[in-house]
Length: 294
Length: 242
Ligand SMILES: Nc1ncnc2c1ncn2[C@@H]1O[C@H](COP(=O)(O)OP(=O)(O)O)[C@@H](O)[C@H]1O
Ligand SMILES: [Mg+2]
Image (cartoon, rainbow over all chains, first blue to last red; front, side):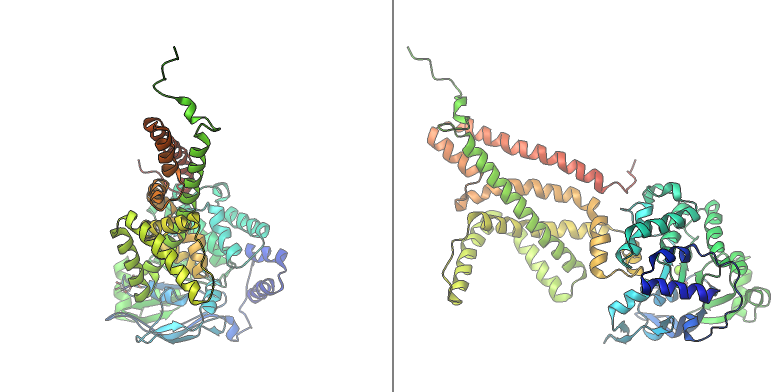
């Protein structure tokens, strides 16, 4: 089922059979068994031995992580443990110092930058990869000079080159889904944080991404607005949309994720299914982290 | 007995000769042409200069720094004389080197070039400040969605910085309209030069200089009207500070 959906989406991209893409955006994948389709293509994201240093500070010290189609991976860990950096290395907003990132079986080509780090060999490839990753930021980062609808159709029109009427139809369906159809002509600054973040999720969904990346999507929100955003993300998880989610909402992570990664001091200290991580943590650091949260 | 000569002889402003009205208006038109052309060229240079200063390599940054420092340090009148005379001389020498006949640079083209170079230095600084005022997250989001650097610039950075740039850019426009008067020194028939001719010929100094003042004022008022419209449009996404 998941694989089918993925294939459909790929087909849409290549055949310009634009009408059908609309359904892919609607994502009514109701149930999904385990995918028998386990080639590299089923690996939505593979991160291998990723290192990142900022000057003298080594923030990631060899992180490897695989997200298969349909996985919902929650990354948890203390502040400063490198969660955002890891997420931002996946779409090359930060350039790793060493290691590699593959998306849908295709490795992003990197070369030495002459200063001890790496840089992409091919800017176009990075741009193509990024357009398959829907990023949602802690601080929303909606484009302030555009209405909500314009924000949502921007990348489909100007990156993916979709026809305008199709982009608008898809965007309106997504905005309806996140409960913002009435606000489509408003400017972001006039919306609440929760509304802005839901719009940002719609904007990320509009590119029909292979994987959604969330960096603490509720951390900048007033407590009473957290629920509405988590509800939208939970919905996406139910459809088995592939997601990597950095979050401090442990209860939520336990509910929606099928795999939890605990990052500590730039390394994966422990990972596994939610019940094991939260119910029977092995490492001292994870035990301490979990008790500090409660 | 003839009528005593009126204190102000309004008929001198008539549109058809012997009135000087149409001469003044064509001077105004020339001034506007130079201001529009020079300002546009200045904006182009300014966008390039601002991006060069912010994102360029060390050499580009140094070059931009030299450009803005020198142009802003030297009096505009000196720059105009320098660029106009030295500039046309240089072009003709280059043409001669290539075995081509020398050309007369039109006053209009030279004027646009000179005003453009001066404006470019100032708008580089205005635009650089405005671009820095755009929240970094907006540019990051654009990159995260796969936009190329050019797309990021045209779709996000430039429109997002506009509200921060407009006050400075409007000032520069008003300055550009008045800097055109400096071109009188190189004999270009803009409003100030033709006013001086009219006044010198008729001896009606007060009348003609006041008339020119009114025309400059009208240009400013009309400009302010349009600047207001543009500014409201550029700020449409911003919540006004109380
Ligand atoms: N651009 C940067 N320059 C220098 N240090 C940075 C930069 N970004 C992050 N860091 C540092 O890297 C460490 C990890 O940051 P981050 O990945 O944001 O942590 P987390 O998201 O887990 O809180 C922190 O110590 C932070 O100060
Ligand atoms: Mg973070």
